[in-house]
Length: 303
Length: 164
Image (cartoon, rainbow over all chains, first blue to last red; front, side, top):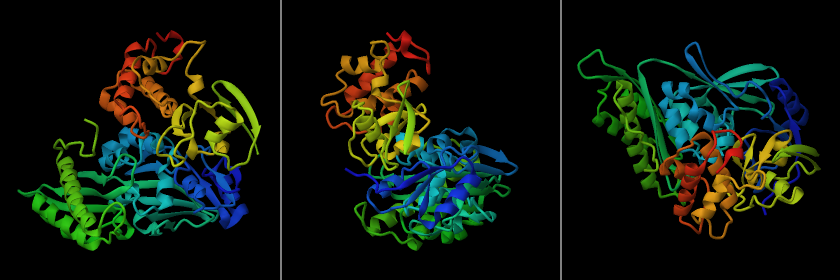
């Protein structure tokens, strides 16, 4: 039987209350959102916080809105909620592609966006998606609010810039017209972590005869890419023709620069191969969406 | 700590440790043993119950998190002695052998049909894709849910009073 070790429980009713509780109980307290990463860690005694600060009852952290030229996603938004959000899917199909293959439908009902980011698992899909999108993380502490690029959010496996007295409150994704995005993942079965996964966002310049890549973002999960992104592939893409050859080469570059580890999900060469292929597929599908062409759903679905 | 929650319409208050998992609260404190405690790792879905109207894996939630909230378990499917169409479907189509996964499967199926009254087989399979059955090969579970969809005599989201 797996049960967490002894822990105290506090329920926060506002962000300020949560910050007060985190300050009062100190570095051995942990924020509890969906709990779908933290509670398994506590069962295995990999995490043994002294106090849990439950933020599930805080109003206002579960909204998905467009403000100005940003999509704003509250940290307490559930995976299922993001997957069902028409406004999120309209602007950033990569988020829906990724959410369709994160965990399973029941886990997605309760697991949160903020929790996924803060868990900082090296195989976490949204970190790659938000990295590709150059999203910003809004972090609130007792001294005020700071905004950190998702590309600078992770310090390493299971470690982020959010300090013990702070709370991630929101993700903000810049909306820039003319783009398309997509996510591709290979996993062993429903609910498992990625063997490898790639997210892509592409903006096209169609003013010339052959459309070229005006800008691109490439995110990678589970393959040891620094900050979950592939900047070398992004640099290569800029200004090149938006065609299959360009996307295939960008995939190769992403594969060369990541650092997968061999484990029960596969050897290094297999993961590199997947990285290249999935990056190319995500770029192709993102470009098709930027063109407004019909793009296949891509993510594995039951036939 | 003292926890009060509503389970199947009845309010319960118990004094438990904050570390107690929701599935153990339901089974051991309330003695509602229809929900099963399976893999303990949020993989198998035998422990699925509704929390504020949404299916969750209760081995991966603390009872404390459900304080002040509403829980629905398999014991809350039937009303007035009449089985829910989902339960009748599992009987009619042999949707179980050992029965261990059944309560979780039925809670997910009820939620699916409340939101998608006429699901395709693909939608049924996707809905239960986070739950494991080692007996049926899933075929009869899908048939059972289809049967329930065809015999659901009620509007989505309403009570089961009009159930066939």
